[in-house]
Length: 318
Image (tube, rainbow, N blue to C red):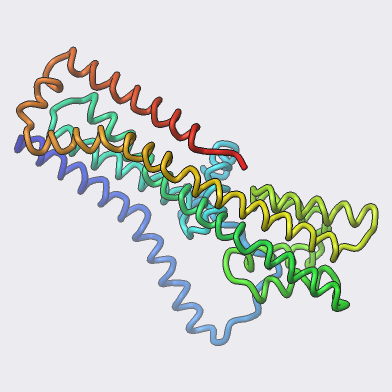
């Protein structure tokens, strides 16, 4: 047991030290050089018109590698951008690697089971990605909640005699994150020369919500066929509010089912962890026998399948 613990600590220190030496230290050195240059340069000049894309990595070598693998890392980069977190792809991958090594070695030190260690490592590796996905979901939920206010503000601006572009600028200035920054990017793109239809389609790609697509479709249709855009936006805002009301009613009606699914999904792993801590000698009957290891693997598989089925049941379309 002592050898396993020492090996675990050694591997953890090696991985963390390598990450600090390869990633954190060069990044801090570059930041320090930039700060010194800015202090010696005096007042900053006005920034350029184009906003730099969020880098895939803070290191030039990894940035070049990730750029060539853009087709594979593109969805992950888009997920990070939609979450609003100021992290890069390499930060997320390294966090997943560290979590996998730490939890996997810890479980192996307790159970001496390679299968359980691999399962725990795979679960730990998915935790950073799950955190990013949760941040994305929360950000999109906030956007969906305040989106009708943005539409109403654009409609009121147009009825007051302002243009559609001015309405976008007013939304960007008046509303907070995430609605304001997204409309600011939409306004900047069309103001700096990008065609409005293309800027609107980019907006719909950044915000993968049905309401955002309704808004883009309504504006593009009005530009092609004509009509009172302010009235169209008023009707669209009313429809979005009704959909949001129905969504909340569905969440209230399905609260009991979602709570039951959460308890059923979390009870087996929690009880297994408690038993491993309180009565490890009893759990060794499972981890020390090939049949017990197969039973654990089958239980994990059934647990994952059951959780997915319950999630599918309680995820009601509205």
